[in-house]
Amino acid sequence: MSMFDLTGKVAVITGSSRGIGRAAAVSMAEQGARVVVSSRNQTDCDAAAETINAAHPGHAIAVACDITRAADQQHLMDRAREAFGPIDILVCNAATSFMGALLTEITPEQLRESMEVNLFANVGLIQKAVGDMTAREDGAIIIVSSIGGHSGGSPLSGAYAMAKAAETQLARTLAVELGPKNIRVNCVAPGLTRTELARGAWEDPARQAQMLSRTPIKRVAEPEDVAGAIVFLATRAGAFMTGETLIVDGGKTMA
Ligand SMILES: NC(=O)c1ccc[n+]([C@@H]2O[C@H](COP(=O)([O-])OP(=O)(O)OC[C@H]3O[C@@H](n4cnc5c(N)ncnc54)[C@H](OP(=O)(O)O)[C@@H]3O)[C@@H](O)[C@H]2O)c1
Image 1 (cartoon, rainbow, N blue to C red):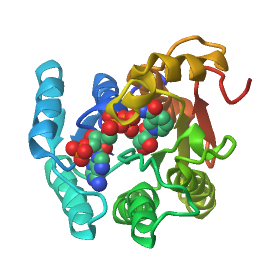
Image 2: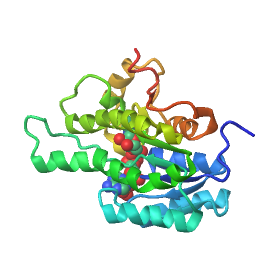
Image 3: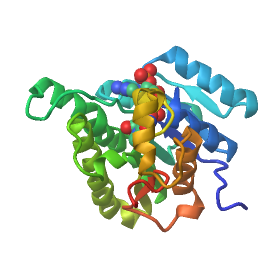
Image 4: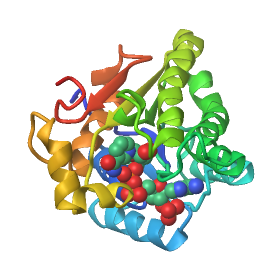
């Protein structure tokens, strides 16, 4: 059996209607997993699930979920279990990049909104999924953070970067809590990736050139580049890794 085989596994992936989450859902289905596609928009989720089912019949369902709503989080897990059974893999990927407010000027509402979607929601999702993993003494949780939470401060993405940095510690703490139950918790921290979230950076030639000038691999990441790391952490190949953050940035942070 391949080290990357996910046959029989059930994966819930937030924010998988497009971008990195969608690439992760496609890649996991290719490895045999049954995947739950999710975002706030049911139509977009249906489209992503249809594409996956066309190649792998019966391997995807689509469930709308605003991750900031506790009732939606519970509905997502309930629907996953009804359709496919206990959850083996949770990918906390959905996020929004809240750019433009200096931390010296940000309102409490803006700060709370950013922390809700980029951090607190993931704690709620993990709490609602982890029971299945604890019962089986097996599971993988992958949180998609960002190199923005690792590198030097940036004035326009302070709230986002704070939440992403906290995700790294969330993974470490949960890794210690859940390791004895054989549940692994890791982060994947992408650099600039060609998705809607970062369109402003990669579509603007000057900004892209500035980012790539300090990146050894001279290109913007494709969503599949990041999905590979997510799949690795979900499979037997990543079975002895926990509490870590895999940086997938073409060497930018290292350089
Ligand atoms: N792209 C990059 O350069 C980059 C770099 C570092 C880290 N990341 C991280 O990578 C992850 C994926 O981002 P992406 O680049 O793939 O962005 P994306 O293409 O904009 O996709 C974001 C996904 O999350 C969903 N989403 C947003 N808010 C949500 C909410 N409140 N509830 C549920 N779903 C929600 C979106 O769908 P709806 O809006 O329809 O709900 C969409 O499916 C994020 O954690 C991001 O911080 C990205």
